[in-house]
Length: 340
Image (cartoon, helix red, strand yellow):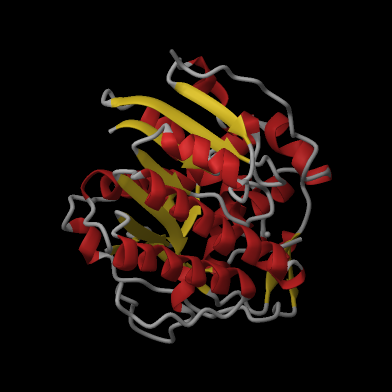
């Protein structure tokens, strides 16, 4: 698998994935391309910079010349880079469309012209929209509700069209809600953790009955790596297997882990377009050998412990989302907002 370009590799999921690839003996070089916007932080890569196999490039997936240069030097692309926060998409829909759709097209066009061997486009269960019952398989209709989900659905379709039209070896992954260490504190688990650990209150939308599937980030990354290695081009793979629970049930777990009680919870009116339930069938990826390893109980405890031990990583972001941004040069080798 030689050289892999990871876009958005300084973000939450992308940084975990990049570090995972660096541990693989058959990966010669991992190049992270990240614009270092509010959700991308060089600190997420941390000890990865000790590896001579890591190359970091600050830049945007909309920069055609830079994308061409990088894609030409790599055999595979794993595309995480995206605007990804639902609430932000209500007010910045244009930015979401630019990055998520046109940025994806820019990468795909480079892959088409320059002949990459593998291209994995990373997406979300939100493209299926809310389901009152049952679970969405990969061939289910797309019915996104909010601008963020619509932009991801559009980018999925663009990616698949490049396989069908040009033969670009694209696979699409769609995962449920990820959690784990290093996640930006605008998402519900780190948001609640960082507030409760400081003795502050948290807000629960509606009656807290929205259902999400929680998947540890390392399990998702294992699934994505598997699709990168043996996924069939042109196919979509749902990656799930975590724990389904309501936001109220999640809150109860977080209160217990953070040593707080229900006096710390304030109920507020539901936000706009807050889908009641997401659910995916993920049997297809098990056919590749995928098996989630982290239980929700263990993963959540590990995550809260990380936030307890690393206030220096998240405290600047609580005060100012851009505060932790740093400039690092690396030479080439040889949600108050809630869950989605």
